[in-house]
Length: 121
Image (cartoon, rainbow, N blue to C red; front, top):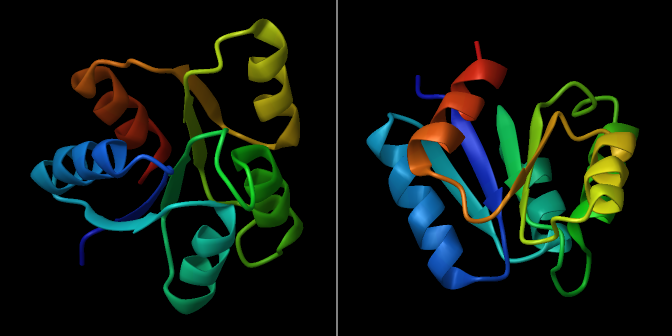
């Protein structure tokens, strides 16, 4: 069974790109356009890793990370933040809330896939 990755971003272009990259590497991919939709997906389908943007409507990536870490069923799930927010305080905020990695866009596909593999069994 393929490992499942949830990509969360309000940009359809970014979701398409992430989905294509992940599927090419053999991962099953789910998508969500914001944190609220991501939480609904997590409740309905098990996921092995989350890649989330920060700036999104309804629920941003930081609030999503906090919600994931607060749920005992998901608390150990690896999370990668993939954001245009490059300031050191944004990196610290993401990691403080429980992200495993914080990556600034743009990122090379090979580098992102190496990060995904490093966090999955």
